[in-house]
Amino acid sequence: MQRENRRLAAIVAADIAGYSRLIGQDEEGTLRALREHRAELIDPLIEQHGGRIANTAGDSLLLEFPSAVDAVRCSIAVQEGMAERNSDTEADRHIVLRIGINVGDVIAQGDDLLGDGVNVAARLEGLCEAGGLALSDDAHRQVRDRLEVQWLDGGEHEVKNIARPVHVWRWSTSVRQTSDGISNDGEPLPLPGKPSIAVLPFDNMSVDPEQEYFVDGVVEDILTTLSKVPQLFVIARNSSFKYKGKNPDVRDVGRELGVAYVVEGSVRKVGNRVRVTAQLVECVTGGHLWADRFDGNLDDVFELQDRITEEIVIALQVNLAEGETAKIWRQRSGSPQTYAAFQKAMERYSNFARESHRQTLQMLEDILATSPDYTAALYLYGLTLVDHARFSWTDDSEVAYKSALEAAEHALSVDPNYADAYSVISYAQSFQGQHEEAVAAAEQAVALERNNSAVFHMSAMTHIYAGNFETGRDYERQSGRLNPIDQSYSLVDLARAEYHLGEYEEARRLTTEVLQRQSRWLTAQTILLAALWRLGREDEARTVAATIKRGQRSFSVSRWAKGWPYRRAEDLAALMDPLREAGLPEE
Image (tube, rainbow, N blue to C red):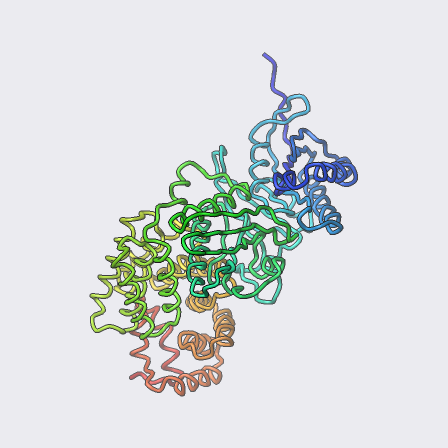
């Protein structure tokens, strides 16, 4: 029996992002450019760094190096060289590589390499952003102290046909790591460790401006469906819709939101006919990875949206595991008209006030009268009811909480994987003092949907009230990363978590940042006051107290304390005592 030729090696797996599109667009030109890149840049660098080509197939390369250091040095030189060469060509013709690097056991079969070490490298290449590198934990350990390279921790990923999760470390020319993933100095946000995307508002090509709600509903559904794909990182609507009515450069969008790709498009509705165009654009190059046009009847709009999202997932070369498809492409209730009505209700809800919330409830009740299983309306209905109870905008808070929980349970009976419904449950139970149950519901929401900024924010709030401050801090950081432009709510509760962890200076910094934008936000003011008092800056704390008195003439600490449902009395006292000591009235 012949003994297998096994050895330890540094393995590099590389391919071209959007190769099928490039070939379809210009087969001869793409192949010619690839040959030139290989002959003039890639192959010489491989030889220079002591590597060898083990296999080639289409657009892919499998390389072997004697060490991880050589493999990384070569790969970075290739990526930087390719970026320079692409600068001389049109954006939609750029050839951009994705490179995965692993150190592991391989089996040599002639010149080719086989084994788990190769398989992991191939999976890393699939997790890599275009123009970057993705390293396994084993490879990272061998280079982290030997190369002056900044790595971004991409976390663990379950990958196909690999028994254990793969821990990913990322590099790109734009990587800049911050403590909480939120850039606060105008620098580009670091890219996540998996394909990252923002869905921009689509253009309304209809003559009727009232159709804007319908168009926004189409985009909302595409975004929601993409958010359910666990292998993607998807920016929240509140941030991506900040570009509505603008014509931003996708390169700027990528830097501001910290994503590699954006989806753009338009919707034209004429009578019962709908035409949707969409394109997937790479932020670094501005090149189109995929574009298509979809036509159908109004009743087919959900099918059109699913076709778009499926095409995007395919273009990003995301492989869905068994069982994920059913969770992602789901049955909806309602109609396109219901969609538009719901968008109007959402718009009214965002005007956060007692009267606008009352109007929101009426609009949602009208929607649910004709579409009782419409999960989005059930979620917003429950959320609004909890707000009513929380802020004493109703005469019977217990009835409001009960109705909110019933709406959430109804939504789960329609879709058991509807994370937002669990968020409503955790929200209501926190304010009912049922903290153990609230935390369980919050964790269920996070487990179901890792791309939902609101889910992370609500779960963070639940954990903070329960006294789990570190978890609350982590969740608010993730909420802010998913929603980097519209992150004030995340920053306020992040500041509260930092305060309870004794990080008073960070709490002061965060609340000051929020108040620069929204100067009368009472929650931010009280946390700032408490942080200043704990820091020994008592005169500044008293100045904030005076500001609160001027703006809130009926303010009292005892009434304010009733709105904070902490599990432990000492946690509530830790936040309220400085308010009293700084001179705010008790009653």
